[in-house]
Image (cartoon, rainbow, N blue to C red):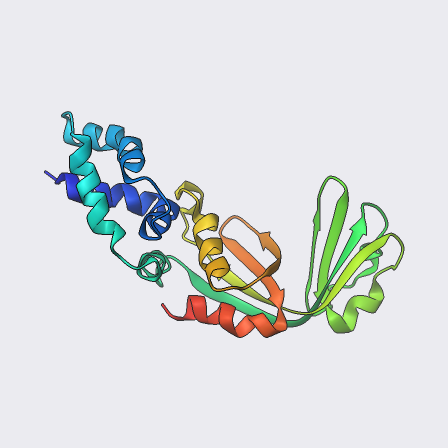
Length: 203
């Protein structure tokens, strides 16, 4: 049978964002213990004192947030799937963008549509293919890092938040994000690419 300490660690592994915030002294330990208690009691088949869980959490909270994120971002969980450079992001009022004329041979091209806006990220040498009509904003000199996520990423609590928190803590500004089911592509200004790459290359 697993101990309370081991089961507390299991809960933290399922909630990497809570784990990171805990090491940063940004959460109330007793509140986290209450949040975890029901699952731990189910696993043990008996009532558990909050202080026992709190003690396990206090031991864990002395870890470095970098160690916690590094453990989560280990090679079997996340990998660098690709890097892209010399990109431009063009934001439009929803409507005509000229994107329907872009050929498959364009080096890099991705588009996303929201309620009111449409954003296209394209290799800078090909942005001339897009219309200037209804263009709201253009950001040039971008680079992107594509990360492969765990196959069960949809079942990991706050998987994106955990990744983004580490990026924010490194002082990197994200220009845009695009995701598929098990990938996330992060777009930053080109001067921020190497610091971004180092976050995920360290594991």
